[in-house]
Amino acid sequence: MKPIHKNILIPVSRELAFDLFINRLTNWWPKEYTWSQDKLEEICIEPAVDGLCTEIGPFGFRCDWGRITSLKKNDTIGIKWQISPQRVPVPDPDQGSDITIHFTDAENATNVDLVHSNFEAHGDGYEAYAEAMDSYKGWSYILDCFKKFAALQPV
Image 1 (tube, rainbow, N blue to C red):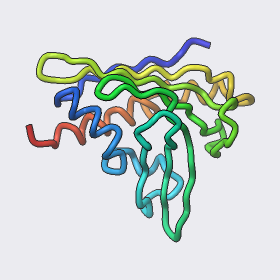
Image 2 (image 1 turned 135 degrees about the vertical axis):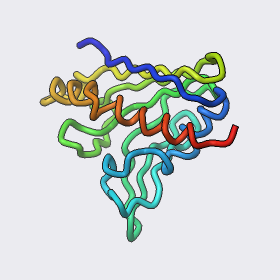
Image 3 (image 1 turned 90 degrees about the vertical axis):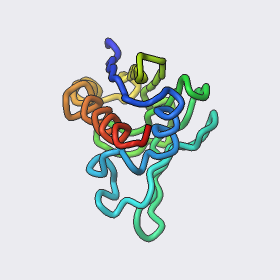
């Protein structure tokens, strides 16, 4: 299956874009795309190789939904996406797809390039899952939320 490829221009420096993506995920990730919804306390990426991607909700709810596979500060983030087509976290990383996000300089902005691949690892339903993530309600919407949040940052 062909990987999903999304590209967006973020109106901040590369360093700030990277920082916002890693350290302020709670502020921009769409709450409707979490298990906790409007009760979300935190969604975070532990900024180190093998660091966890985690959601924290009410009353100590915790859900690990991915793992950092590569990290180069202000440049690249690799994530093992361990959310199944049924929207259930999957503990086995071999049943997760792969995301790579590159941050590169652009004139007065940052180019964010996202590639989501290896959907086949999710098993049954992976084709419809890939289609959904490639639609406007998938990565396009998520990255648009990121862009809108970044645009609010002081220069």
